[in-house]
Picture (cartoon, rainbow, N blue to C red):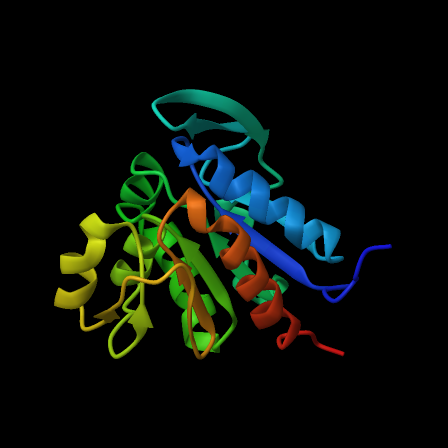
Length: 184
């Protein structure tokens, strides 16, 4: 029997082509198993294509097109990594505004690997204790974050992790954090 800790919680998963497949699929599965309703939000209709380590991976259906998505319709946000995905999203004002709306509202955000890149552009990392893929350490530090090398770091309403190997710890921390956001 599964624990439905997140029953009724609406979680946006913001991605575009090039998201790291395991960093979307595994956390989404854990959130769904915990009772959350996850919705893929993307800048385009139809499908987005994942990246699986060193090559293109599977496609995932887009549930809500970004220009129709509103942060107030969601309780929490998941930002998968992959190099291509967040690098593209951070160049799209609508994506940055969507992330900023979650941060400004104090809603929980879970970002893994390169996912925190978008948080930098949303102005949501200054003074935060975070981790990420190692190549983002300088970017996060320059934006005012305190970067640490740990598998899962929780700071207030934010949980971050380094890479796909950290997914089990990331999932546990995200579910715990998101559970505190329940509206009930």
